[in-house]
Amino acid sequence: AGATGVGHAPVLSWGPGDYAASHEVYFGADEDTVRNATAASPEYKGTKALGDESYDAGELAWHTTYYWRVDEVNSTNPDSPWVGSVWSFTTADFLAVDDFESYNDIDPPDDASNRVFDAWIDGFGTTTNGALVGNDLPPYADQTVVHGGNQSMPYVYDTVNKISEATLTLVDTRDWTAEGVAELSLWFRGHPASTGSFAEGLVGTYTITGSGTDIWDAADEFHFAYKALTGVGSIVAKVQSVDNTNNWAKAGVMIRQSLEPGSVHATMVVTPAQGVSFQRRMTADNASSDTTTGGIEAPYWVKIERDLSGNFTASSSADGTTWAVQGSPENIQMGSEVYIGLAVTSHDAAATCQAVFTDVTTTGNVSPQWANQDIGILSNDAEPLYVAISNTGLRVGGGSPAVVVHDDPAAAQIDTWTEWIIPLQSFADQGIALTNVDNITIGLGSADGPTATGGSGKMFFDDIRLYRPR
Image 1 (cartoon, one colour):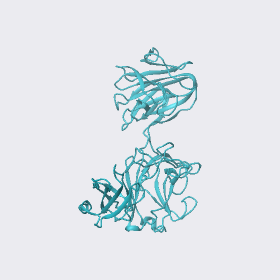
Image 2 (tube, one colour):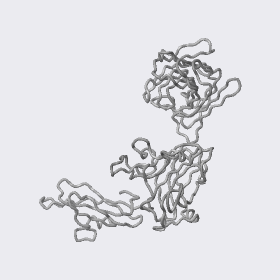
Image 3 (cartoon, rainbow, N blue to C red):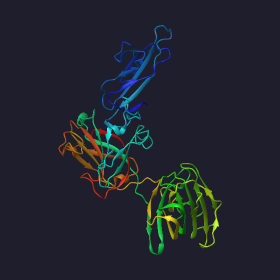
Image 4 (tube, helix red, strand yellow):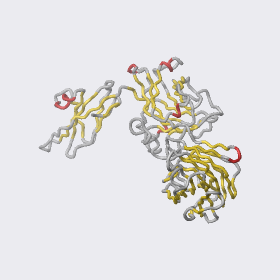
């Protein structure tokens, strides 16, 4: 089977054969006819010179399968012509607004540059628009989280006291009445809400919930309640309980260089069924190692200490008085300023683990206030998703936009590819002339303007299309 969803004016291309001096092209809508066609047949489209291995098929019918063949010709070779195989493709049953496949990683001033964030104008360099599309480094379009084809558009939003919008000015697909189209379709995917939390109860009791695959390997996923430590210091805590979301769920004390998933760290944890473990990452974004003692479970005390030379000592205790050093001290190079606190991972990205800590104490130059966040776990704040189109100018500061908001106010937290179908009449009813649409905007947050109670997260968009009624 050949390619499907091909545009309605394709240019076919091929590589030349080893002995070819020219090419004879055959093209039509019937497979057998194309296979048996000769230079006298209507399917014969002419000769192409060596070095010109392409054929413009012109404007083709909607949702139709076509067939083509290229024979290689060399009049000086007795084996000529070499009859080619029959290839096929099927044209799309939609008009493509943007499938994100044409964007590349070529930077200006190269004329071939076509970066996704140069087409979709976002909030880069502004303080009033919190949208940023594309990746900071190549590949600029995402090539991992895709709906169709090989690329999608990553979209980071921040709607706290700002809008979050990205706008594409249309070049080809401006007539949204052509071919009887009546629906706008776009596919999107977000991230779920964070399940991580940190709460301080009476008499120094701390309850933390966290998900995540693990604190292990080259990158961590967990919830971290932390303070800042400068220089030498330590942290002690009694892990009163830790949910058994996995035998290797973890709750304990940690010192780490940064809040990045691959940061170096030293951690002493209690697990539901694997005992206590001194776990560490000696080099950023590299493998982890551990020293584990089985047969121990919560409630149990754990401690991490850092000395002036950068040696980290991990210990555990049944009573908080008599301590057993776990393995040997490890020299882990970190800067003077680090993060020190309490860590919880469920060791199961689909589960949430709760752990309770008491008797938490620190030594050294430690900041007074707790902060907490997920580390390495992608999550989105619930924000409305909307699409706006306009007949002229950018939506912000110009044009006469028509806006349609997704029915789900927490659409940003839908973590599977989801098609959003919008009747084009919804835009027409707001005064848009569908015969000449100038631009399309994708926005998160309030379509009416900034609010102080916004949120942030990351979305992916793909396959923006126009369909006939389905």
